Image 1 (cartoon, rainbow, N blue to C red):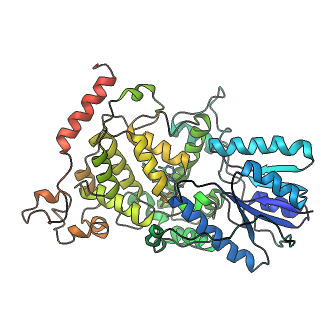
Image 2: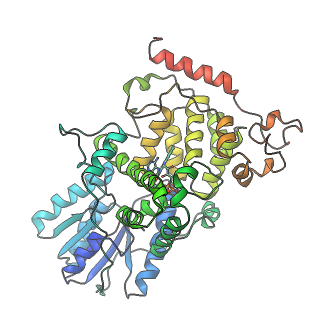
Image 3: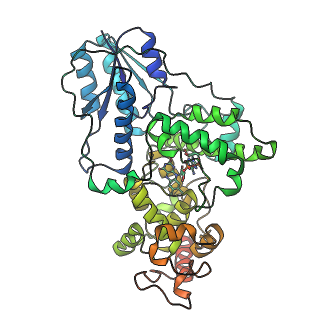
Length: 462
Ligand code: FAD
């Protein structure tokens, strides 16, 4: 009788608690993945997951195994597959999104009376999202307090090694699908920006520690420098675990002068943890403002403004560079995500939920917790957010964080010949605006006044 390992967001051999536990039963392993139904087609993170699956299968083939892929409703399919192969037990690593956690709880209830054991494990986070609480047992609303408590709870346990030997279930399994789906045409530009596989993720981590960790704190905000880890898509689909990242970074010998950089990096991993703990408490995080009063903001309906933002045609070069980076590569630098999100919400006064949805479709690292929390943070609608009245000036942000316009020129070729000085506000350039680049779709000062008036309205003008 096989032991089923149901892989979802954990395509790795090392530090995979479900896989290790299944191996320890001595039963032959049946690795499965159930593709969700995708009535609207693939999103960027679906693409990244599919690529990851394909590479994971290459690794597994060299060990004599593979992932059997099914498609459809996992709540119905998993019990069917388990019954079909006479599985003794099912193993999975926990997921924490509202839909996933409900399906998993239902499956556990369903398996219990039929004698199939269902075992779930921690693997996607450093701390289970319900475990970090304040002194009176309440979840934290503020990141700094959350992170202090999480750190005081002690270091996460060391990552597990990959199982030394894997014995696979070799009998035919009916109902499995093609391992690989045809790639939609839009995904071709994404390929050049990503490498896949557990080894690639480890490689990226090792290079980051060697080359960038020491100056992470000073350089992480500059989009023209490759100074951040680039690990977010790998973490998203579990090609690497946060525990592996935490341990490698904590154990790395860094110059004592760089201790603050290390702490800063670990705290960024902490933001990911915090986001999942907030989503755990607020399953509607992507749908409702955490601060109720923001539900009353007079959001504008502006389809052409929204479209210009999505396509990188707002006339503000840093915003446009970010939005085009997102479309072409599936990622966007964190600083630019903040500027672009703020621009949509405050300059265009368009509902943050529309921006959240666009990022959900186009980010290869999209996760429902980090995306929703960060959108609420940028929009000022969350408990621990930048206040709404703090409105980022996209030109000043551009001058500060991309001073020579290197990042802008990489993504907005129309501005290639504009000088370093003028590239941040090219409409003021003495040489004139390049013919194929738009004028700003909104004036900064007027947009700022409009956003502040809207905010005053919801506060009752006090
Ligand atoms: P590094 O700077 O190397 O950080 C290391 C890791 O820490 C990241 O891989 C990520 O897992 C975590 N991290 C860093 N910053 C944050 C943060 N602000 N919030 C949560 N985790 C963080 N990140 C996602 O992983 N998925 C998303 O869907 C997502 N949506 C975002 C939407 C907006 C509007 C904004 C402003 C930020 C969003 N982020 C999201 C956070 C952040 O931009 C990315 O995690 C980061 O850019 C990834 O690059 P990196 O791996 O090089 O990060």
